[in-house]
Amino acid sequence: MAKPPGVLFVCTGNLCRSPMAEQLLRAGLRARFGEGPDLVGISSAGTQAVAGRAMWPPAQAELTRRGLPPDRFTTRPLRRDSVLGSDLVLTATRTHRDDVVTLAPEALGRVFTWREIASLLHGVGVDDVPGVTPAERLRALPALAAGRRGVVASPPSESLDVADPMGGGAEDFRRAAAETAEAIRVLVDLL
Image (cartoon, rainbow, N blue to C red; front, side):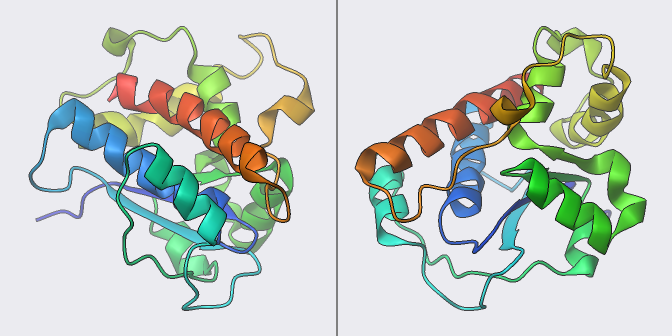
């Protein structure tokens, strides 16, 4: 049996942005497809993460505020094999995207910031995505998004990043989660 397609979210410490993205995608897929077997493998890592730490408390508080129960999340450092084993790698910022591509250049066509892929896929209809199952559709998204570069208007570069809320207040975490949720909604709607 083939492994389910995998999405890897990447930020710096794997303490805030990428674990929030991981949880938000998991919740979005459950809301769309119901409980049951995992349709998509979802994980996260950090370019400077130390393994085994808990999610930063303000990030967990924001997820709880959004109705997502706490999980047993622990941080993971970004590894080349994780990148190569993922069908889609989504990063918090353009700098993280560059770090991933430096680590695994052959993954270039599958690496986007999560706001970048949402921008590229904005306006794409569900019927425009090849595949029948969510797994098939997910595997088609990187090529579809890459093919729209230069076709759709590019937003300002800085709008492709989700700012690091670390050291900020609850509003900074709320903003990071809202920007992430907006991007993830585009993906979930196309699956």
